[in-house]
Amino acid sequence: MTRNFLLFSLLLFVNFTYSQDTLKNNNNHFIIEIQETENKNPEAKKWDKKGLSKLFVNTDVSILVGATQFFGDIKQWDNIPAYDKNQNFYEVKPSIEISISKKINHLFTIQASAISGKFGGLRKIGEGVDNEVYDPYGFYQETGEYFVADYKELDLQGLLNISNLLAFFNTNITTNNYTFYLKGGMGINKFSTVNRNLESGDYIYSYGYSDETQYGGNIKKNFLNIPGESTLIFGFVTKYELNDKLSLILDLTKRTAKTDKWDASLSTLNYNSNAIKDNFNFYSFGASYNIGDRFTKEEWVTPLEGLQKDLDNTKANIEWLSDDSDNDGVSDAFDKEDNTPMGVSVDGSGVALDVDMDNIPDYLDADPFSSRGAIVDGNGVEFDTDNDGISDSKDLESNTKIGAIVNQYGITVSIGNSTSNMEVYLPSIYFTSGSYFINSSNLRRMATIAIMMNNNPEIRLNVIGNTDKNGTKNSNQKLALQRSQEVINYLSENYGIAKNRFGSSSNGEEKNLATEIISTEFPDNNTLSEINRRVDFKITY
Image 1 (cartoon, rainbow, N blue to C red):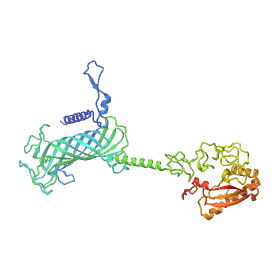
Image 2: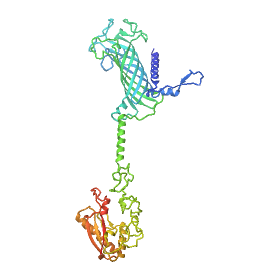
Image 3: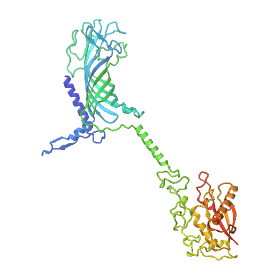
Image 4: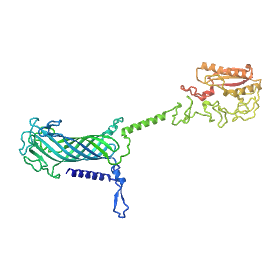
């Protein structure tokens, strides 16, 4: 009978699984593909091996053995199993379970189980709160009672993977090869139970037996005629994976019947809280074997963990966008020139400003306002072929005699009392902030002044110093005067021009040519300030 029941259970489960898997529009199931064989008969078909293997992907068959512990009317103690030496009766009874389970996703698994075994209980006279016995036939002998039930049960269960579920709240949880499940479900329990007197073993009452006499309880009814009750199932499962195919299982499950008949003793006084609905625990241990392929193992990522990763990626992207290795105010992600020196003004792409677009950045350009398209040297200074102080792009007289006095267009002008300084162009000498040192970018300008002075011995020059607005007025006044005197000393020492041909004066910061925008953070980063840090020349007689 047990063999037939187990066969019936397995066939029922396979039928259920197949019915579910043929739902073609359900992404959680797999389609069994059927193809025609080479047989000319169009109705001759066979299982596609690939489709059949898909059916059993992540499918395990398990065998569990263990013991039952009953809770109901006939029980000696609430939790501890009892034993009677006279009948050699122990309340813990054996059972076996065969199940087949299929993993649906990382959280849910469905399982069908077939169980066969026994459960029982005893109650000795005088050792309980109340010893009222259910005795409709008057067979009770006042010596105590015990019962044994043979049962077979078919269950359908759902398992929740709490190992993965806990990762919703703590992404640092690691269980190695262990997986923990909560399970719940429903089943149909078919049982035959008989209640007997404790000392004599004589019959008191039964369900599922046909010989209901004082010495009966020996002839069971056939499987279809014995009682059946629905059961509610709740349990906890631990699974330890040995390899891709084999796992060990520890299962603790409670089954509660919608009946008070399992112990063949109907409660009339309701003195025991367990009496209304009989139930038993099944403590089992066993193994499961994967009969098909497994999905490629994927890292379990919960929505919380996925959100955290998205946040980390976003944070990394923000940090990447905000990185500015050269501190020019343009992030490295968009900076086309990521090694700009500190304090240098840049455009929106991080490239150092080049106002005159001569391909020499302003912070390296000795002449940041050269004409558009003019040819410049490595310092950004336009070429002056005739050395008259007027760059070739502005020079209307490109072959001026060396040392001639020219106007702002490079045209030679005559010297006389009527000559206006507005008609004469003399190159200015530029300085770095706070300095009166004549750097190399000014050497050609100084040479132009020297040649003009040597070729025109009758003229004198007033050398006028200027500063930008950085610093105090008094200090700028002194700095401007130092600049003019340094120019005079340079022309005298290097070109032999008498110092009495020069006059020295200072404008300080009072007569700035360019309007400045002063930055407290980068006081030197102002191209217009460079225009104001200069020495001008004025012809006198």
